[in-house]
Picture 1 (cartoon, rainbow, N blue to C red):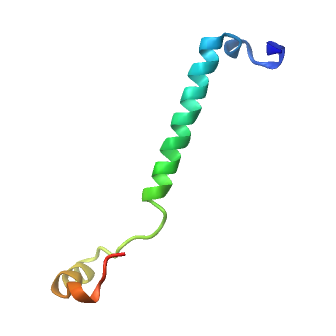
Picture 2: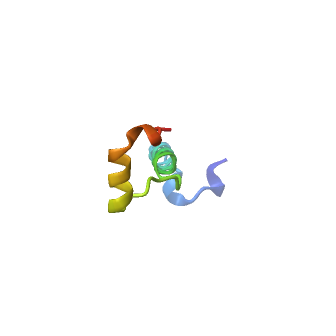
Length: 61
């Protein structure tokens, strides 16, 4: 059964470590895309001043 695996993954502990690394990378990627999905607020000085001066016109989503 383990003959098709690379030599470094034939040990059970190495397989568990590799699986843990893959899962952690998947979680990191999911967190990254959850926070940086392309939707952002304009941060130039004029937009910030307008947002601070008129907070009722800019509802928080």
